[in-house]
Image (cartoon, rainbow, N blue to C red; front, side, top):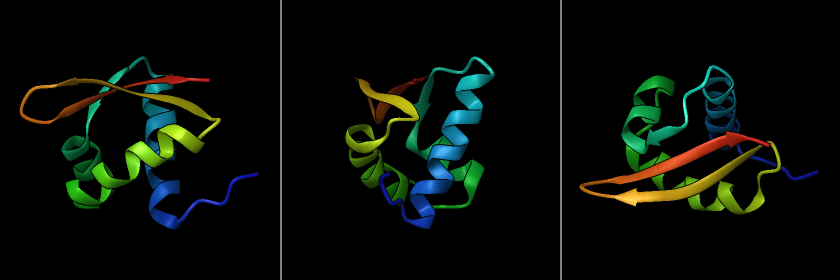
Length: 74
């Protein structure tokens, strides 16, 4: 089992709950606002979580002004 930091656990929990409600696309700043972290904290952790998380599939989806992440429950 992979060990997650407190911030990573908060991000994963938010993504898992949101994806279960049908949301699929996220931006770091929106996740950050919802869980009380900075967008930089969230944005720097998402690529790492995409590689090591078995709970949700996190995929870098698009890039306009900021990266959009597609999240689905595994």
